[in-house]
Length: 394
Image 1 (cartoon, rainbow, N blue to C red):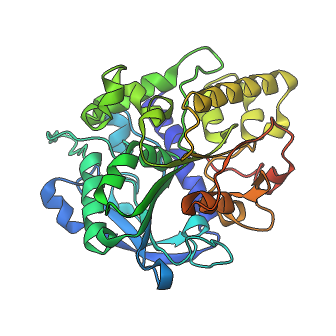
Image 2: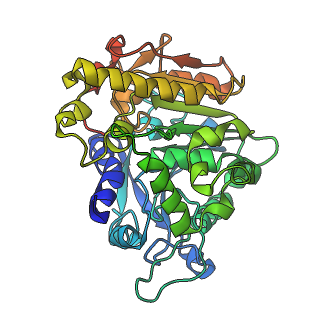
């Protein structure tokens, strides 16, 4: 597989999810963190990092939701250089406004627990889930591997805008952004007032270390290349890097158990992006073409393999222990990223698990009204997936 193909595979999740997201919601202007440039906290192309902030009101004035967008990773000079010419590597290429919906909605009927919070969508332009930090810049490519600095600079900017007085705070993210919320969960907590209620939500960020249908573990090799390219090792938890190769520490199954801050894991057990890019990557057996884009088109043999993927996923989740502060919403939909899209987050036809829609489960968990740790039965038992099971979110 060529580098260009890899980039398209690992970045396609963001583009399609954004297309669905922009179908509804309200639009929020971009904010550039120009002051970050002097600190070397820049996107791949050297441009300043950016985010979109919708101010809270009323009872939510001192509550903050910081949401990191997804968009895959780049794992070498070639893929990072290609990425640097897109919105995933340069703030020069970003839209000046983005739509907020789902967990970012400002309407109580659509987002009952977080609608009036300060809501931030952090743009993703480093390609390492905000972990990279290399000082040197190759003059031939002008590539800057500074994701960790970008994360810190954005946080400092938000703290100066009132997040330092937060009473409630939730870091969240989708896909590579969901991985960001796991990797930076405790770090985010340490930035905020000691009395604040601080928690973390990972949506579709629990990527598992599993071989593809040909028996090749290319996901582990890919993450190893990401860490090497970006110089990420020093920004990954030493509790993991002291025991495992640094690339393995991008897999949440090697991280979550050590996280001290309450964490909610929202994920489909048949994560459609992981099926299409880790289990059945590009160039695989063409007989999988229909199945990997629509689980209803899978043969009995293919479904058996997908059930095996689900088994591996649940084993990785269960290995993290059953901390009473953790939340779990693991449904059996063929989906990827479920918090950003209104029809999935909170709507009459939204997915339900244990009698609750996703927004209700997350809200009850965050405010301590009740815990939520539920895992769905195997496909095809969940009839509430019908809203989006055939949609393309990758």
